[in-house]
Length: 206
Image (cartoon, rainbow, N blue to C red; front, top):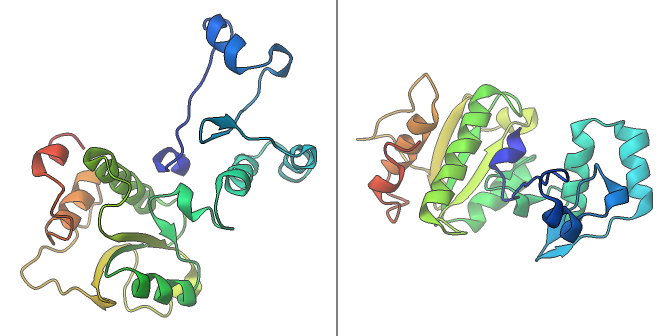
């Protein structure tokens, strides 16, 4: 479900109802199947990787995640496929802050928990409404226990950084206890680091 809020667009063709579409995009002897497209062209999957999906993952959704990351991703984590970069170590956490003058990082108890899903959806919606690939801030997420133990924040929380330093809450409202998509959007917007996000684009629609 968390991939719903990624940079990957998912579609479905009903070969019975959309015969013209299915003839164009799907081989009749390969149904049901999944086809990945990159830059408008089908991605050719190595036969041995289908065996990995079958034997190692045995139909588990993690197998599909693995294949998407391997063939669509630009690194081992598939960072380019997600709006929020996963930061699995302090080294990557520090490098992320160094590389982004403005950084927004969500800290969570575990991957895929309620607050993490809300965070991913909120970030996704911000990107959709501004219609930009880059919203002017690095977006990250942390759920690795090794990192959580070394940062001075208690999950779940969202921290905004400027030049590697935490932006103080002075004059700003803290994140509400009950996380909702709108609450996350409002919390980020109040800092004005995403000043080009017009209020009318996100208010009332999230």
